[in-house]
Length: 489
Image 1 (cartoon, rainbow, N blue to C red):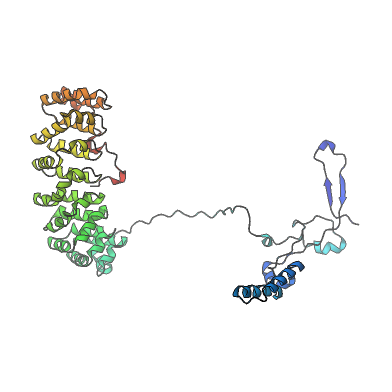
Image 2: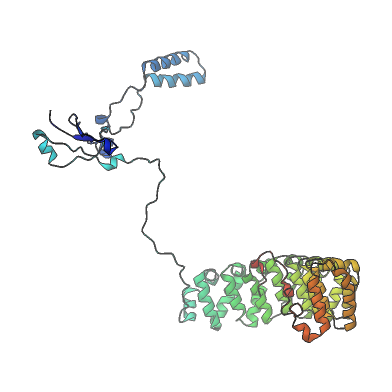
């Protein structure tokens, strides 16, 4: 027997090691090199012999089951009869071929070769093909590190051509609406329109009038329509206004801030009669006032209209003023109507629409802004001043509720600020002192009274008296639903 491999058995304790012993083992078994997968699939019969799929007992059970269904003519028994016949007599499919690997490790044995094995050993140790050992792993698949890719950057918009008019006639003439609804076409059309070339404006207006709704509501096309309105002549503006129907006007007022600016630009220039647009907005004013973009559209149109169109636009809202003032968006429309209607008209709106409603409005998050707007705009009109003092200051229950309310106390400060008579200020202070005992806002109200008594010079230096520093000014005390809902001008 020749020495094939020596394994040294060493105990764990070094002190206990006396003498290393050598173990003689049998010659290594011949390692069967498995065949590649493709060769196994091509020659399955050479590697795997189809075994008998059923044992003796299983064969007997299948035969008994087949016999039990042999006599019954029902469809169910016929199905099972055919099934068991196929199981007993049919040839089952052979299992998929598998490579038979030796139990020996794939690591080559280090042994002393005989003379007969020297020629085989010259080629080096025998390794199994690693690809044959690949299979589904039960461990978590760790992603391989991929080569870093450059970050995707948004491509900048293409610059306008050097000759926008020539580029317009070459690329956009004949399909202006389609070009306006794409980012590249929008850039080219805006550059061509800004040149104010008559040939460009004529073609653009003519094609827009045929399908104005598509371009005016599109996120890109609305910018083109607005550019045309800001540039074209009165006749061309009249053509565009004539192409606007009721649904289009309402959609432009509510879809986005960019579509509503088409109406805003239209009323800022007012080259033609726009009473038709006002006639569409007026019946739908209550709906528009309750939407974010609709209320801004009403405000911008109202600010640019003359007195006649203002009266037509605001008339449907007058009976609803006290309710619209409570709305998160509608209160801005009411404030705009009071601020831009003139002093006497605003006083008339206040007396007719808010009489008996000032207390609940003053304690509301949104309507308190309307009350403050009334105080600053027409609060010195005798009829309005008398109504404010009677409902809010000279009524002990109302005054007690307001000085303890988070919004009402600002209305009280605004009334003190707007007082122009020393006698009236003293009377307000006398009414306030008993109610400030348990008020959480007593410090602010008392500071406002002291600043008012000291005179304008001292009052302007107090942080609560100066309107520019008053944190309640311009609706600052209101926590709006979201900063993104800020009204955009």
